Image (cartoon, rainbow, N blue to C red):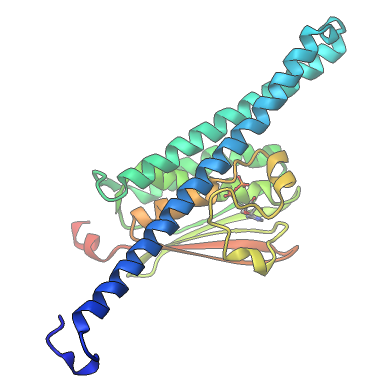
Length: 264
Ligand code: ADP
């Protein structure tokens, strides 16, 4: 590597050595900081519902529970907070599973059309309750892809679920999937509230939310898009997002299909 000392003065090997060490430490520090931030965020996110549950249980025990109406109201809140904790724990476990296994997973052949149909059927029920229409623009006879089918479906669920959560009543979530020869292209588009451009870069970070209160209110854990990003990476794919305030948001995923084509 250092066979051509002309470009460097004096002792080239030493200079290069120093540079490499500095980069290493910077990278390690960055990873360490990210890990610490994540642990701090998780602790905070877990503590919020727990503190609330603890408070309501104590108030109930102190006598508030004697009034039937108050008791019902407090128990409803406790139930919601328990649900929140449970979703959060599920998402943390899923994210860590995907991160740990994405390079060593056993890949299966995924029947893309079948998986998408199953997801749309389930999501239709959720959309109907909010008076939102899911529009199916999925091409027939899509090629099969290799990967984890459960993760592939989870990726679609998270994106369609966000579309439903951040779209007002009577809006639409459009699911468009086609094969452009090199890639399986998945587009999930909604007619919702949209996202300001300044947030788009950070959207896939863990616990990054545009509006924390709104996300909580619609039942978000703040991990949905981080999970989507890691699933897309497990398929060697790419994801991009386009959005316009009060018009809607579109997520575009491209998963390479080149070496699967001849397998049928
Ligand atoms: P959350 O559980 O909060 O929905 P996500 O990781 O799924 O977390 O999304 C991160 C944030 O990105 C959300 O809090 C929301 O502000 C924004 N967001 C995601 N999807 C959409 C969408 N389809 N329309 C508008 N905002 C969205």
